[in-house]
Amino acid sequence: MNKVLCSTKFLELKATTSPIEGVDWIYAHRPNAKNVVVIVPVIQDKYVLFLKTNRPPILNEGIGQYCIELPAGLIGDKYKNETIEEALKRELLEETGMLCYDFKIVSKNIASSSGLSSEVCTITCAYIDDDTIYKTPVSDGGIIVDRIKVPIDKIKIWLQKEQSKGAILSAQALASLFYLFG
View 1: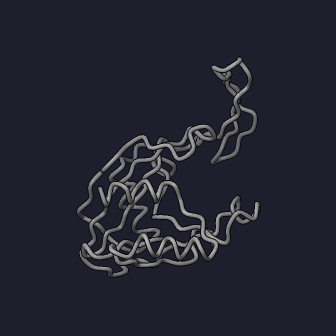
View 2: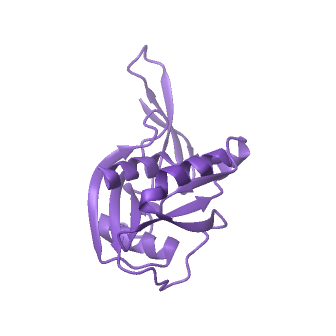
């Protein structure tokens, strides 16, 4: 069984039969995208650029004050045949205003919550020579509230401090850092 329970432009709620006891398993699915690209913006081999965001589900449920994420976006939502590389460059420019000509795909098919969503991401590292802003970054409807450049050797301490202030850390960001430091 695979049944759509609710459908919007960007998200569907679906039901399928669980392999355990045959009960319905409800999950989220993105009907308009084939993948997500998560970008680790490494600036001058010294810094990583993080985003501070206000995500409605986290705020609405009172789970945290804000989220710490990396630039990311859907692949194929705007341009059906978009490649990972095209989405990476587009999303980096949209969310940071920066350009990247040197990047590396470090992992594909990473699920952040496979029991909740069918969404998977591709993790990339974007190596940026300078932090020139070529285009005013978007706020994504007020979701992105700040961009923070953190020295690579201070990331762990900075993330711990942000958590102590009420931040929620993105699982995709943490997985991406594994590849940066690995």
